[in-house]
Each structure stands twice: as C-alpha cells, then as structure tokens.
Image (cartoon, rainbow, N blue to C red; front, side, top):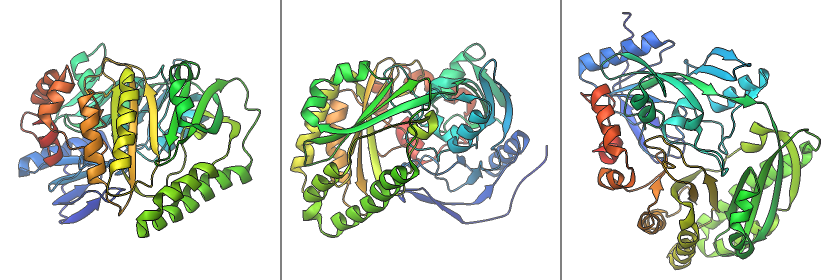
Length: 439
C-alpha cells in the first residue's frame, strides 16, 4: 500500500459562511481510492481523527477536524456512464455543477436539484440536501450504489441489494461512517423546465397551498418578513425549450437584483437595523413576474453570492400552517430584525434512515440571516417551535439539537448507530459535531 503521509502542519480551514473553522495536523489530497485507504490507515496509525471536506458549504462543523483533513478535489472524475440504463458513476469529489454538465453532455440529468450547485456530490448527499417537489425525495434517493472507505480501512460497496443496511445508513451519513469515494446515480433523460415566478399575497398562497403543491412538479415560495408578500416559483416539465430567458433579463433578475442590489440592501440593514422592515417591503415589490424555459439544471440552480447563515427544519407536511404561523409571531417579537426572506419547500417521503424525509411527506422552512447580523435568538426560537411539531433539522445547516433529540426524531437512529459501530468502531471519523449529534 502506497503511503501518502504529508508532513504539513497547522493548516487552517473555514466553511463558506464563516460559521466554523479548524486547524488540521495535516492534509492529504488523494487522487484515487487507494490513496484514500492509505490516508485513513496512516491517520489511524498516528491516532488522528479524519474528516473529508468538499466545498465547505455546510453551515455546521461537520467537516472540521484537528487531525487529518482529506480534500476530495482530485476525486472528481467520471467513472462510467450508461445512457441507455440511465446510470452514471462518478467520483465523490465532483461538484454538482460539473456533474450537471457531464450528465447533459450524455443526454441525462438528475431528477431534481437544490438551488445551488457548488457542493460536491458526496457532501450534498451526506447532509440530506434536497430540492422541492411533492413527488421527489432528497438527492440521496437517486443513489443506486456507493463505495466508501470505512474506519477499518476496508473498501465497501453497498446498494439496496448488497449490504442494504449499510446503504440505508450511508446514503445520508453526515460523514460518520467513512469516506465515500464513488457513487452510482440513477438519472433521467435530460428535460426542460418551464419556470413561472410571480409575487403573490401570503394569505392566498397559504389558503391554496395543497392544490398549489399537487398541481406542480416543483413549487416553493419565499416570504419577506414584515410583509404579506411572497415570491412563488413553479417549475414544470415541458417538451420544448421554446421560451428561453433573454440574457438581459437573466442578468437583471439573477445578478443585479438578486445578488448585487440585495447585497447592498443587506449591508444597509446591518448598518441601520431599523430600516429592515422598509427594505423588505421594497424588496418584495421589486421582484416582478417572469416565465421562461431552460434545461432543468439551469432552472433549479441559481447563483448565491450574498453570504448568510441558515437553519432549515423539515416538518410533517400537515404541520406547515402551524409552524409558519409560529414563525411569523417569532419574527414580529424579535428584538433584532430579519433581512433575509424565508424559503418554504416540499419533498416526498423516503426510507433512508437519517433523511429528514424518512417515513413522511415533508415541508421545509429555511430561515436565514445576513452575515454579521444577530441570528441565534431567532434560530433558537424557531427551533423550539419546529421541534415541538416533530421537526428534523437539516444536517448541514445550523441547529442546536443533540443525540437525545435525534434518537426520538428518527425511528432508525439506533440502527444507524449499529452500522456506525460496525464500520468505524474506533471513531476514526468523529469530531465535535458528530459527538454532539450522534453521542
């Protein structure tokens, strides 16, 4: 076995949002499965913990370590693709942006995506990343099989038919079971989406929510705090890309208004908090209606250049009205102001043990705050309301829950722990975050 021990010390790392940082004893950047195995073996021999990192887009400390940081950037290749079977096998460090381009070149696409594409595929799956759509689970439900290096230095391939317990644990694993090196994804033929985006009164959207969700392939809405206005987004599959968005309109909406102007508004709100309600009122009126068609991944994913912190809770879908009403009361009573919109999305039930959607159709409420503005009281108050309704926090976003809560929130939590004991008995892959959420 080839050693890749690198004598580099005190390498600092921080995530995209700046909410966590760590200094590793050493880093490795493997370019193959064998080099991952060697890195894990060397770390275990030295008594050092190991964490893999991708793009750093998790808001939590899931990837932080004082031991060995394994950077996956070189593991970004296409292993194989079968357009007829609609299966694509890729290395774990491939970003969603690159994955989307690779699949499109072969006439394929993922059935659904979230709204950003900067994460690595393994990082997105590990935290339960999801998009919106009543008929779709999180991205991990598209995994056909995966390969990981365990804490014992073994290479294990699993699927629903081979080591199914490991598969149902590893599909959403929060980095606790090993380092995923390769994934096979179930794809669909490339498709076009018709995007319809329009402002609407909050009351009418909430009153018609069940039919809105049922009538569209993908629907979500954004509420602007201190207003009664939302921006509704409907995305539906259509046969022809016959109404592309003009370059000028795309620049105006997605670059100028949604990023540059919004960033300026956030900075003003941070400097003069009392202006936030008025700023949100202006922002809610600035977004106009638009309709266009484009390849699916171009509609699903949009640029996000304004830095923020985020908490997101998945709730039983029937609990959404009560949770949203509680959120509005919380925002109105906060001593500080909330400048970022609130996002609401929907997913189907799945059977992956640590998926937020395990066993139930879900509604997700994501709350955000601009970097540098107070957020903890806002997040804690909303978390109390969400957990009282059976909410499960997104594994990659800020929350304050621990293993005792998750043991009650996830019916297969004990089974996940048993798989972890088998694959990583010496806790090679642990860190402070995992100690808190898994015990």
